[in-house]
Image (tube, rainbow, N blue to C red):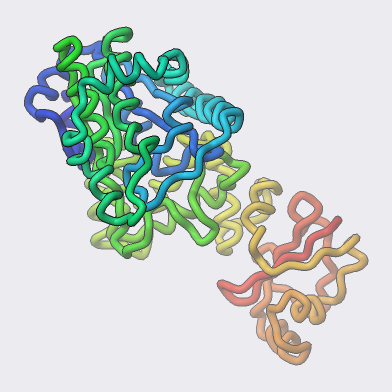
Length: 421
């Protein structure tokens, strides 16, 4: 299948400079395409996965993808989709973030059997003098053309102070990137989010004026959730690819909690599962939504892709244990600790310092009084390691995950943690 048809079926083609000509262009292998990533955060987030996985699809289809790090443009600030002027970034911080993001991109592709070239636009924009930028790039754009772009027009309409010349100029820097890669690398396609179409077509205009070489544009739809929540946001904030910012457990839980109305689209956007399998999962959502098979598949595939299969297995086992469907054996202590980070808990120096189970239930906030705790224990409502316990429970070492975590559950959904050390 032509990769353009694959992207179309998955709902990933939003705007193009010409669908038929782009499809024909992509029919031949070896095409070079790129997407830009400004290093404005410490890590990439799951919203970046749409263009990253599109680049991976191009790679697996025999093309040559490139990821462009905005070491220069990240110092300026893209006005697209922004209501206010960005704070200018420190050059050293921007460079450090670019290196971290480069490592993330290379790891993602290598771990999933694909290759990609990573470049940094500071390498060529940083060498431009102000006169060269104005004469060789700015001369090809009229102010009227730039004002008509949504990224600029929207800012002027919404913001009383308008837009600074700095952010106004972002467009021509991105256009110069496309021209540079077209000339030096034979790059003929730039891809990006739907809010980037104006910047991308500015690059087409510059290429047309300076060389007349072939070039194309394609954007993806901006993802929204059926519930109206912002995609990629959880109660704790954005979902990042860096496990030190968003734990693999939290990453998995974001996907496993996907709305039934969104999950099939997410399977199309974010996985490489074949059409037949996704359609079968769509049937499962329609007929047996309570089983959440599609969500569990999505979560496992995404966690495996970003964090590795072993980490995905750790997360699944920890999730099963937390929801009373698995034993403690084989549960990774570090994963469980991350999963229980937000759970009510108490710290104790040793097992001998933990009070009796009646008192512990009160200290963990699972029971309002010792009387209620005794009643719940007598009724068999309290479990440890998914086994019912009584008031005489003696805290055997085997029930502590990694020797330090004891999960106490009351009923199906309430639990607390006794932590040692």
